[in-house]
Length: 276
Image (cartoon, rainbow, N blue to C red; front, side, top):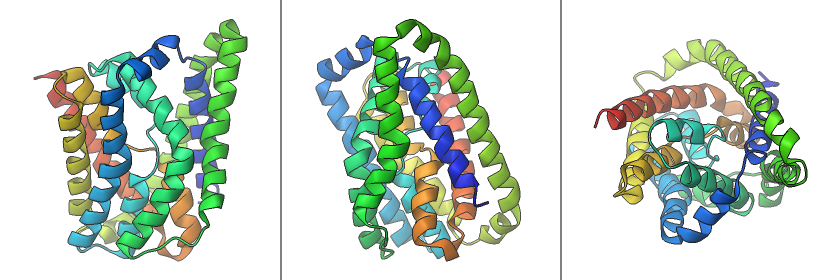
């Protein structure tokens, strides 16, 4: 289990690099042109979603490990592979791409701040200094992003050929790590059933997804992009930060349950959108 956070971090770094080498000028133009929508999107992702997580853990009676997992999950970043799913569900490609890039860049200063604030608000302060968290986020997010953009600019041809194989490699690494987490966590997950954990995680997902849906409107495609971006997260940052601060809480088991509940609700939302 000690290698799983490393595998997840490697997976997210490769995914961000592969995503950056596919970036286009349309993504930047969208960011500049749709400033209001981008501003609302960042408020939903960086302010409303963590606030919902803190409110849920205060309102729902859950074990400490589940509380820590849910709050940590809320300040992790968007999955770099999410834009493909959002576009398939009818979302605008430039919006999905620009939002994912922007969140990745802003995660460096904002995630350490959110860790500090959410820890105090939930009564579980994190002991790792914000500077160390910022350094970690920079290593797994910012550096692969900048390297990918540099390769895209200097070597556009090879960059395009690299993108898809790297995307698949990231998928296999991340999926394999999560599958191992699920299988090894099943006995512990059974212990979380009936403790309010599923209710809390479902409420968080529905709340953050609902807010994203409303703030992304009235365009149905934009609703999809912001709803999924607000509610779905990559587990790497959540697992690394929470486990480093509270190794005795076995946060990974609760985080696996959070991922399962989150994925089920996201799938239901995706199907509902397609049949509207």
